[in-house]
Image 1 (cartoon, rainbow, N blue to C red):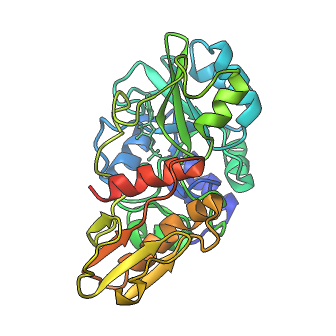
Image 2 (cartoon, rainbow, N blue to C red; image 1 turned 180 degrees about the vertical axis):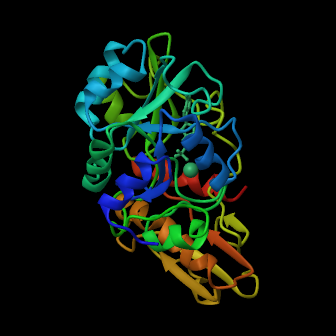
Image 3 (cartoon, rainbow, N blue to C red; image 1 turned 135 degrees about the vertical axis):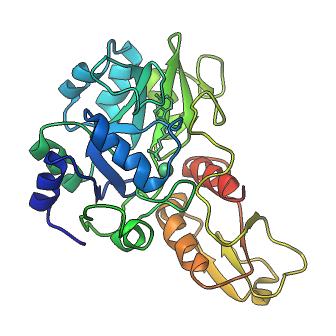
Length: 312
Ligand code: AMP
Ligand code: MG
């Protein structure tokens, strides 16, 4: 099931789908310009067609084939954050199958930083649609083993590139009129974007909308099989687990299992550990998982977004 890059390239060129590492999470890749390959991705994930996919490119020039126009701010942000975990939503050209964009007139584009991902895109010669390599609404994979567990018998192969560096999905940013709007928080934070664009993140001129109009921004997403609740309960139910952050709560000893996203309270470390620890807790047959929310700043915003959606 684990295959080398050359084999993955071959399969992709023949219209197949393979899981590849990126710096955010593992992606389930297929030829973004092939309706058939894209349909296979939706089928393997059991993802509904209204939830659009991100197209991955290897060079900035590739964007010209996909988008009709590139706003000035999009260029500035791409120059600063690409390759990296920022996805830009732009008006799409005809060549992009409408299946990718859930019927919208826009397409989401990103240049990943992971060397393996970039090599594969370059070697295939076409952009890759690559949503997270997990079943729809389930936990995202940050190791090749996570992919194997969920999709092993549904896809044509997995390229094992070790654990993902960032560990949460990219920031998704679109433009309404000329105004940048964050549709999904991620590793590139609102503050970082505002700074590069010379805006104040709190002030008008930059928005965030984590619910709609991005159709994939469902309230329930990123879910373990075990029920997940936010916060630490006063009375700890039997056989429940805790996903902590920083200092342990006083009643930590009452939990059957304990994991800490970052004992030192480091938000970057917490993001990198998020899915791995959720996968781990989910595998232990617990009755419930409780998760502590992070400070609502920097990468904490993205982690809290995923935890909130995971709690359904
Ligand atoms: P995933 O590939 O699983 O990380 O999810 C991709 C997410 O990017 C989707 O769920 C959407 O919320 C967002 N997205 C993709 N394409 C668009 C688009 N054209 N407009 C707005 N959001 C998009
Ligand atoms: Mg996903």
